[in-house]
Amino acid sequence: MRAVVQRVTRASVTIDGQMIGEIGNGLVVLLGIARDDTKVEAAYLVDKIAALRIFDDEAGKMNLSLKDTNGGLLIVSQFTLYGDVRRGLRPSWIDAAPPEVAEPLYDFFVRQTRATIDNVATGKFQAMMQVELINDGPVTILLDSKKLF
Image: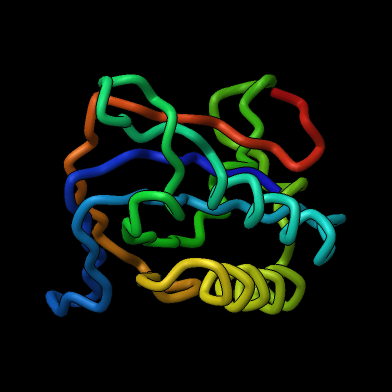
């Protein structure tokens, strides 16, 4: 499972001109699910994201987590995080989980996150979405449940 985590001052997701999710200060998580991922990988990333110390404390040092700041979390499913372009110019999606595998794991990830974080918004699985955000810092962190980076 992979996640692109961005610290934001605000973010929203829109489908067909209708805003379906919005947060203020917090994190946007673009979440990619691999074909061999399980609930173990999802739980690992939920815990890691909620505890990442990437918010400034009173001294201006990145020392606080999303839980510490009561920030919001916007989760957007993004299978393209498993696009492989090492050969050629057209991405291969062979490592991305098919929808029947990915959707239950995405739903599990969202449920687990909501058990930890008060303000969670989401996109819609398999929908064409427009995501708007103001990256704060900018701070962007890449996470991989297999610890590849």
